[in-house]
Length: 140
Length: 140
Image (cartoon, rainbow over all chains, first blue to last red; front, side, top):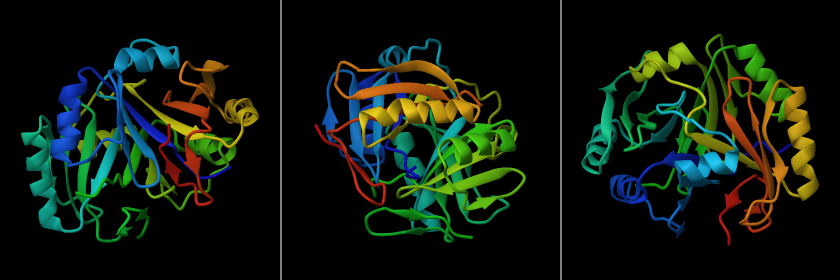
């Protein structure tokens, strides 16, 4: 089977509030939006921000909780970018979970939650290549 | 800023149990593994399955809960693949959340939870292109 993920879908409560975080904080442009979902074309897959009740209905589950046991990471090209991006995300409605510092495995990173409390790690990791299209390759 | 996600990290409780789901269920090959984390090189980004206490420590948070308000989707090339993949995931330790059927927006999909109750949508969506490298493009 292809080693492939097609969509990451985040359950959210207020589309406009969430859109501000992603469009103004990260500066990302939606590729599609309606009253229940916003899609962003990412590096090889799609990010969806979907009304949480609609996600629960689609999944056939109720009571999905936040913060969930996962995180998403956005890597940046330089160490100084970590704090700059975190500040921009906070200005767009996020809040800091962990101030940036150097983890034991190297690099530099902090965590910001989006307005629905989904965790984003903002990281500088010089061992992992990112090409011009945003494709990320694991490295040691 | 690049419209880019570098890593999806899932908090898990038993690495061997989780590895079986991803390596035998999806047939994916880890690119790195130690006693706390397993990484898979995906289509333009990296999937990490990380001991939940270690993820909480890295994040500076406690009490991350499952199931969280998110889902991941793996799209397949043909409608018949949906049920075949779901069966294979269940054999590798997953459980069905929603049996496959046709959603209002078209295509065909079902949901399977991994052994840590993280939701995977297995979907056939003919409007979204997937190339030979597994890169997925939004379409209507």
